[in-house]
Image (cartoon, rainbow, N blue to C red; front, top):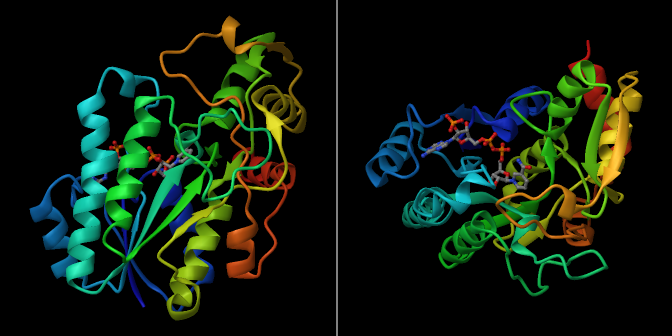
Length: 285
Ligand SMILES: NC(=O)c1ccc[n+]([C@@H]2O[C@H](COP(=O)([O-])OP(=O)(O)OC[C@H]3O[C@@H](n4cnc5c(N)ncnc54)[C@H](OP(=O)(O)O)[C@@H]3O)[C@@H](O)[C@H]2O)c1
């Protein structure tokens, strides 16, 4: 199986590189914007020609949630039009595409974990651009979309790394406690993706799936646990979203129901706290 990873230098791409060591039957090829700009049809065609993949995993995205409010066109080019171009070209060569999306396609007005068919209603430009990407890419019939949430890892910039940095510098951190979701260790998602790539005939289904770690928490709870597990003494103070205004509106509740992907993969997904402890062990080493 030949698998091409786009946006491979980001968090998820790096996690796939790391976890791929345990998937020896896969031939993985990693590209990022310098070699393969997924906003360029020619660049996509050149990568497909060069690597001749059976599957593409698109990890490239515009992920600056607040900046997207001012950079609508850029967000749509990368999160909506580019996956559509990828899906179209993959379809024409009979290549399977796994595309990653987000819990921010939901408005967060629910209070039970979202299933894949629940009504979408993104509140931010980022969420809207990602939803458009899902819709355009799945129209080609060869695309599996995996929505995930609150991605973090030992690589790149993410909430866990920000908390560790500030936790070492400041006596107190104010963190919102009225947004609820589930953190996802990028390595856990990477393993699920690699399992699908390893058994594409059985596990690749061109539909939408949800994947995050198990359990539920607020950003406050997540921060509290990061600081505690890292052995730092910073005080974590709960605040409301109103007290921490951001350009983009986030869903208040965005827990994803994982039953569909759990049934497909026949695997148990770790609890977020268990994965955080594993990640911190790597990050603090
Ligand atoms: N991060 C989260 O909390 C979160 C939550 C839910 C869902 N997701 C989704 O999960 C996926 C992976 O997220 P991530 O956190 O791994 O993202 P990331 O760290 O921001 O990585 C994205 C990668 O794409 C690259 N890229 C940018 N423009 C490109 C282009 N035109 N062509 C090819 N590559 C390009 C970026 O390069 P540069 O760094 O040079 O721009 C970067 O290496 C995304 O689809 C995201 O929407 C993320």
